[in-house]
Length: 387
Ligand SMILES: [Zn+2]
Image 1 (cartoon, rainbow, N blue to C red):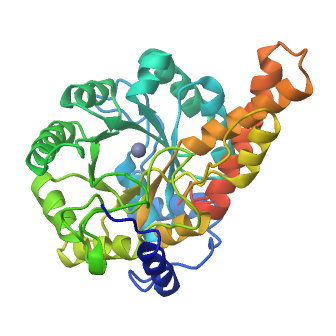
Image 2 (cartoon, rainbow, N blue to C red):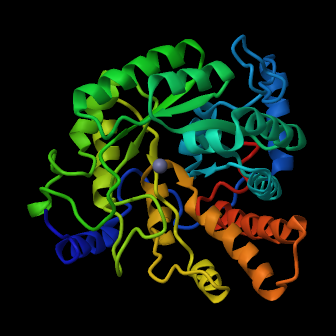
């Protein structure tokens, strides 16, 4: 096992200076999207001229759609790839998180993905989550997709597909290649029958601390990071609709040490390999992409928390990853931190407070502010809800 603290850092710094050359990059900062008002009338007029019925998000039901009227991630991905922005996939497990995320996206006119993990399902009960999301969808105008995060078995994916999820992830990345291909293929076959998209994962989310077989800057097949040629083979063999990549990202609030970064050069190579293999502008997914903002770490520590070494993916890295082709960016840790900071502040400043609304309310506002910042300044999907 080789530390890439020295060589890796130089390599990635070099790659940061070169990126983005491929694919033709969008603007360096969030470009101004078409206004919602104009977009609405442009779509109506073009629908009238073409004589087709305008596709609507709300009220569209298929036989299997027992869950709620949702937007399909396939539609969201296609628009995001075209518009060179990324979609935020926010993990939810309670009412305040759902409200904060959806309200933030509503105000910023941003399309969004709410994602539910196995842990969230067992914490909140799938029925509660379903009803909460239905409430959010009914009160909101922005496109919302619901995705299963890290489905670990075919059975769990099937259950969510049967409940009407429009997107699921099967994560068998810890298994050997053959097993990962086999289970992903099985989920894809079932999901596609019900118009559900499948995300799979190749590589291990170990962070930027190490990767075996990285000597010489080659994209190893024996290491933890996703290999570009294997990514092509995996997508071809399984038929999955999007792929989560391992490029130095990792889950949690303690991802990096010092000034380490994502292997953006590798991300570029993966995107290029998929395009060269005629798989088109293929959607890639970045897990473990929380930036662990310093202001939240400071706030948590100031009000009695203990997260001294917390560090996430620098936001400029995520911004570059977006331009290189990461279409879905998962955010969970940052939401937890914003909520924790908000609650801690109230408890520290008003120790006599015991009304949950008085601390959950400010915590919800904290999360909302964070999500508004992400969609506006990092993912650049603000203003694209009505594309
Ligand atoms: Zn993940």
